[in-house]
Length: 313
Image (cartoon, rainbow, N blue to C red; front, side, top):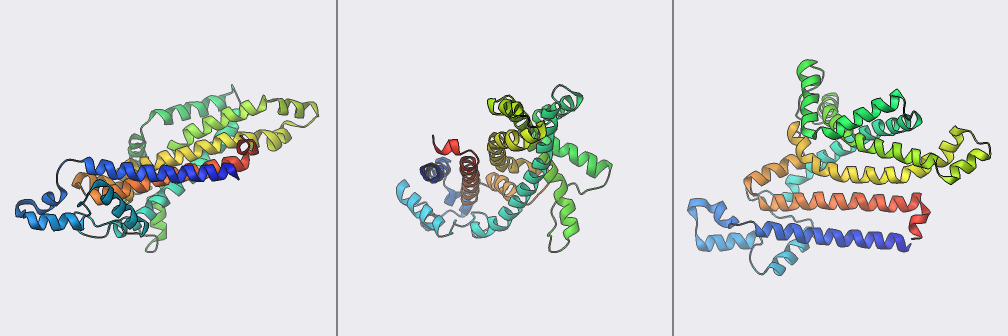
């Protein structure tokens, strides 16, 4: 229980520090947002009222407390560009980004787990060499290059899938599925490279442990040893890597969504940065940071469940 309490407390503290950093960095950006919004029609009194509306009046501590209190109540402020509530603007796009990540992680797991098992089971053979070559290639290629390559092959040359965009599944489920295939594949292929390598290494390490040698001396078959001992012990580090990969994919959403013209929170954030829409930038970065922390917190808790020795340290 102490293990879980410490992990949850640490996660909440990290979220608090992240919110403070995000708030601070936005406030360090030079210029007066109110003056920028008013442009040539600048009026000191109107600018003061606008700064109050935007939460830019008062000391740093007062501004932060007002902002974080509003966030806890679901109020993320208003966009500088169109005046719309930030929460409303981000809501639908966040759901689409979650769909992108869940599907991509699922594809990544479908690729990496069989690849890692096959590679470890055929160490030094052509299967192992082929899988290692594939993972090396995936680790070497930036995500945006991989995305462009997939578009060129499946959309431009073969005309099998759309090059980008998004279709509402309520309007046309089949077209939505087609529009998601390439982004999912890009996320999954990028994720699978490192995950399959870690799984391969973990399996090979587990096969050389004392408990597996003892199991062999008892006459257990290699399949039984793998099923009862090797895969279970190899799953813990692999789970940790999957959690880290999901966290990194949250950052990768900026790239993937812009390559495939996918209307998610990553694309919205890039647009907000180009327009200096501070409330939108602030909320988007906070969501990404919180998501990264929560994913890794869940992995830590699951890690303690899989390996009881961790809870006792």
